[in-house]
Image 1 (cartoon, rainbow, N blue to C red):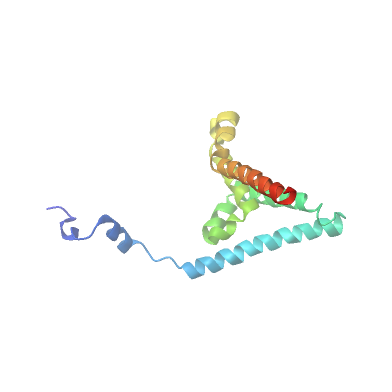
Image 2 (image 1 turned 180 degrees about the vertical axis):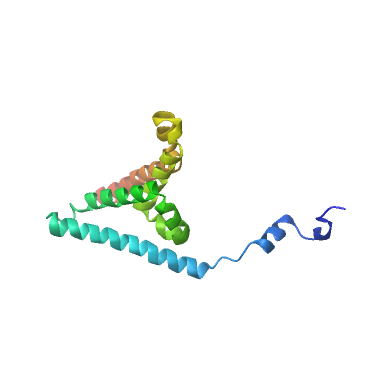
Length: 152
């Protein structure tokens, strides 16, 4: 007799649901909120450093702040720290700049053995590419709508 004969009344989906542990949604949401906020506070701190010590304007400090946050994310990814952190932090670690940098760096590291062009160049945009494409397309449509509203 088959081992699943006694379970014939349960469908596969019900069996999976029965054995899947419940997700602590409230805890995960709170953790994502706190971690995402902490990453944003770190970014704000970096921006304040550029304004105060490098004498940038608040507007001009934006680009180097993003560059520092990307650099920190890539370093943390290369050291294997970001992935463990992201596993614990959940969606909070996917704050756009750091999460995007982590995605690209992780793909590059994963495929580096295949070479610079085919490995790193060909694979680092597999996940990040759609983000870039949809970002550019959305920006285009928003710009067209903005132009129509302003000029009509």
